[in-house]
Length: 170
Picture 1 (tube, helix red, strand yellow):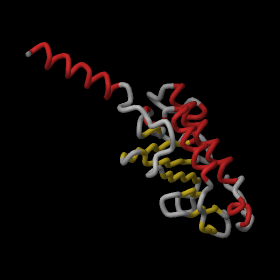
Picture 2: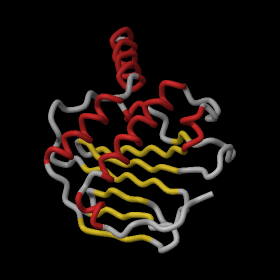
Picture 3: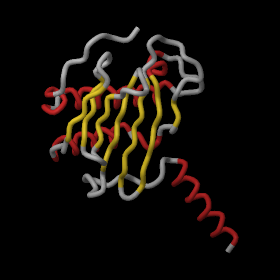
């Protein structure tokens, strides 16, 4: 009996240490994603399928927001990228302890799969090797996902329909 308990605990440990349960083959019905990136925390670019909108940082002119319902193709592409990069295995907080580049960009990623919500916080410094105690492979995966999401957002007709940004960050 004691051996059985030890075996069960070992299997449980391996299961949770390896990132938990495997992700479903197809996109689950409850899949949703929230992605935000910003330099000015009061004016983030946001892609939010939970609430159904896109927001654009207009820099000198605040933000602009529009309703957005992604196509099945977009949802599938995002889900597949999450699975490909195994984002759920990354540390939740991948932000540098100090600001090492100017301007510093910040990102928040939140997604729900099969009733479980995952969150990842990161910043642009880790993409340049400045994250303390962050594995280079983890930083690369976070950067790949952020670049993928930025491209996905900017390619939507809804984002393109928002006013142009004026000014810049230094």
